Image (cartoon, rainbow, N blue to C red; front, side, top):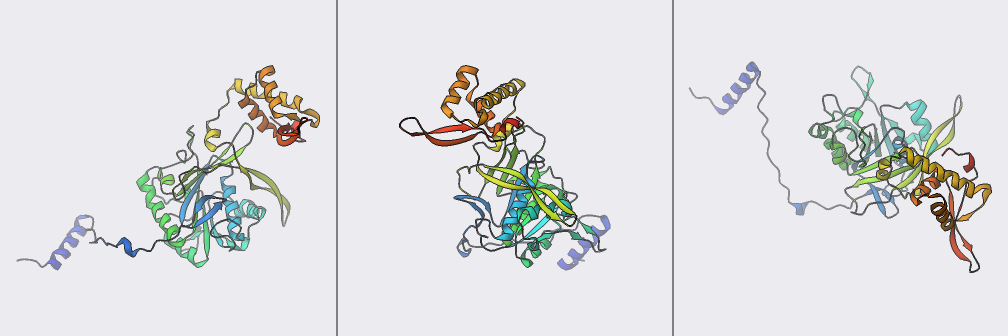
Length: 382
């Protein structure tokens, strides 16, 4: 006796259940849309640094660096700018809300004090936690909570979501070192950004490799840099303390490399109910003449460190007592009398914080560069 298609389908389902076979995949079809029916839209930039377009709105951005370089402080800086409407770009002039998903830092002891030091509007910053049915609080899990995240972004007029650190929010069962696995979490997250127009900022760590490409040093699968539309590397020179941020990926911007930025973590005192406390605040210092790649690739040998110490002592003696000296004369004397290379001299200048300024000199009052020491240079640690 023959069976109808419906009966055959039912029989297959019963057989699958009895034998433990996977249920047949539900039928689906491909949907076509003419490109002529898709309205082109202007790309919005959340952060325009002068002529440089750095962070796109509606996309995933990743910032990465080794521990203590200030990448989380950058997330705080960005959050403060968004809540005050002071970030140059599409959100400028319109304060917006921020969602902050933090796994490692304490809100009471670290995040709120840092937000206060950065000048954030605390009423516009939201701590995000996952609440289980039993009422217990847990950590946001991706991609499980992606849809709920999208709804919260829309409901609270959110322009920025900080995920710190991003890898710790990847759901259990996903191998963070396999690209295909990680994309199961990040591809839907990128679609959340696209649908809402918000910036999703993922904070990541460098692995233990000794390379100089900040994007390739991100711990875990290559998906963390591949899915992101913008990637920033952060580094601190262990020799002289210089901090630098370099944009290593800018898929939606121009082809030209954007200038690296120097920054500092300054100590700021804020008031708590139990008295004042000091916290760090990220402050940009303008363009940097070095990149993150150069700092990562710099490894001074014992001989090079000795040469730099010699250069430091030379500058201290040559510029002691607040006296000024022409840059060209300093460089000539360093090379000819002491065998100090120009590169080593520049390292020593950075270490001491030597001040360079243009002033008129000579009978024709030609403007030339002069060097001098800051007031505390003689006691600084080289």
